[in-house]
Length: 335
Image 1 (cartoon, rainbow, N blue to C red):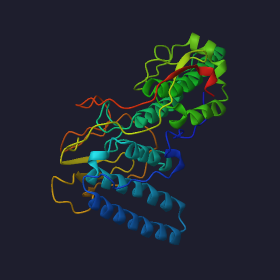
Image 2: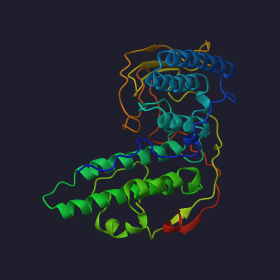
Image 3: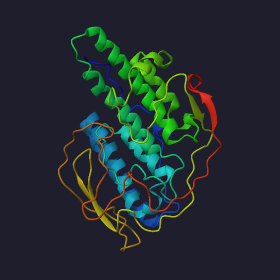
Image 4: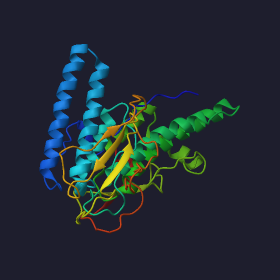
């Protein structure tokens, strides 16, 4: 049975949904190199937009924007590798996923690994991907409701919808229990109720009947507990900030290559500070497929010329982040 199509990248994690996240050079390993590289990327954007307008092509305009995101985060990966775990870069990549229709993993240094030094106090990338996975897994869950009993199928589909909402909410509370959930997507998660025509407060019986993991097959990274409407959840109050610690060497090595998940282009990134910086993010090769859809595809962004860390596992050094004291509130009071 078909289900209501959701926006492919529904979430307003942190400030990303506003489209105004900007990468800055302050504190970068090679600030001047990043500024030069970013200027080149933005000059190319201006030329691309001018041509798209001349061609009266909306598709070209979208492609210009997507490429500018890629060029900017490649510049950052090369010149600001010491800041890639911070909120700024992680939010920028979320912005890319939201605004570029073909954006897909892998993306360098996204999401951040667990316990990374100088990392965002909430792993917003991990939250974002968990919410996207909840949406995508609901499509599979609903399609699996194909028994000969129409009534049973409808009940299971409703269970899938409830698990989607629960999974999205639970990603906030499982992954970042100390963070104010309003800063990492609570309001946008609540919109799932409208899009699914499902009031989460009515999901109690469905979540009692169907175990989201064992019965319906949900598997969200970082989510171990799927909250029900009457459950008590941690009501974090902390704002987003960067943890203590310093990244002293590029996690992916001096040189690494990756294949962009959106367009199939292979990029080679050379970390500044280990070789003479030229202000360019590196070479580019491969064919542009122009296909794909936003969201997580389960890739970890592996590098071809060195080991690349882009989001799974723990960082080598554990750094305690400074976060606010958590309160405890009923889940039904969160909307």
